[in-house]
Length: 198
Image 1 (cartoon, helix red, strand yellow):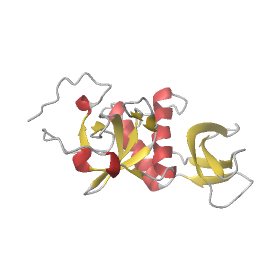
Image 2 (tube, rainbow, N blue to C red):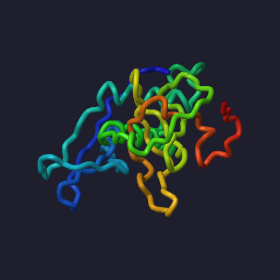
Image 3 (cartoon, one colour):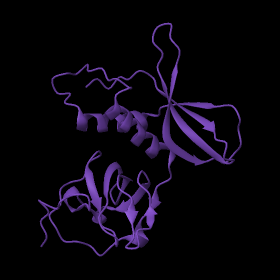
């Protein structure tokens, strides 16, 4: 896949709720067309009030994450110059993950983790579907960042306690130790087939 991307921008706008900002994707304009704004389901506390929308160019990290995630869902081996439709639901879902990673501060999950599970593990990569080993089950998540010790994940299922209370909603960005990351087969929404416990 061609890593050259048309420049993309985020638009940061104030919400009616004071102190919060929301994120949109600015779609590139066709020749003679207008730039389209696509709202993302991403908001964050605003440190300084501003009233005019602020446009931010995608960073190199944004672009690299987008390309890494796209390569997980689109076979690009035989199509190096593939063109993507930014209106496609799958592509917009990936843009949403990039926006969450860019604008949400990862929450440490240490206080809710369960004891380590001894199981077969594979090397983790950006875009892996995984489950997180918590005291309240193993919710499904996707990896959007990695370092030597921790994985940054976007939660795809809410973390719910036995009383049915949502402790952490889906689409939250979490930072967890790599040892707390389990194969997706452990996820509470998965049937568990393929998980090998020792």
